Length: 378
Image (tube, rainbow, N blue to C red; front, side, top):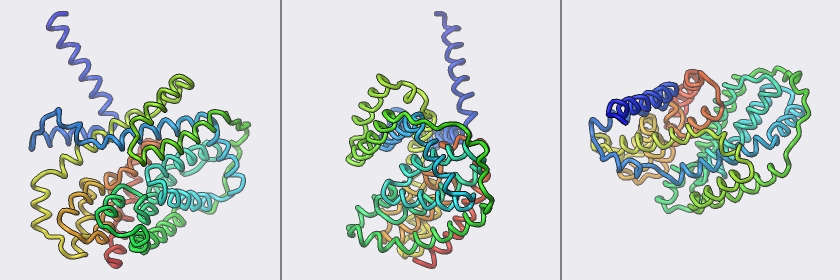
């Protein structure tokens, strides 16, 4: 191949990559941010994969496979059919989904809770016309609010619990007031956002059959995979899972959202690169986070720039007030979407276009009110 053809091939490849990136605003922003970071504070490109939390990415890949398998089994449509015939009002359904998402997030983590509730919500939308964007928004808020309660709810809680040295019960008791207050706020917001209008079930005319074998295997595999991931063996578990479905039902593996995995890899690289900048450390050291209020405000605000998990890790170097930090980074999960990676997962799972503007129109005011509530409780 001539030198001209080699250059042309490379150009075409870069052009195709750029077209794919430009269609995804989040990916485009991350790519631009990475280039700017590399210009300002260059790192060896080969070192960038070391910034990725591969345990999280592999766990996410396994959950994508399993939720796709459950979806293809028809179980979610069957469950949605049963649910809409027992819940007749739009507002009641929204409150039920918020409560379910919040409850699951306390024990399954906020990300895993989304993989259970969002696909169910999308199946409900296929049966009865629903304000799906608003539902996804309040579900994302719900997993962030509910996950505040326990050390198992989200990664930043787990980190702060382990570094604090307090018991499980003491951690829950300390975070209970904030969780209860934010769930009450979310309940009021959900009540106001949805009408008491009856559900239109005219679209629920098909028979909803379930592939019981696929469903049963997927549910058992889901439980086993979460257990292995919790024991930090997500890699081997994912290999077994992927090979098994490729040999048995390859469609499951082929239809997952691979772009979401790429976005997560990019987010880890960009956010951790930003969090390690000397300027950020100097700014935090200069401001001082010695008091509870300053630690709280720093966590809530810094999360808006580098997400709540990196914010918790960075601030823990400057403050030993784990309760104030936990309050701050928990509130920081609201506001801009980057505040919590669960927000990104919820929006991506929804598959809805034009989600970012309505999401922020709700999440940013919610963050402001949550900031005031958290400040009063700290």
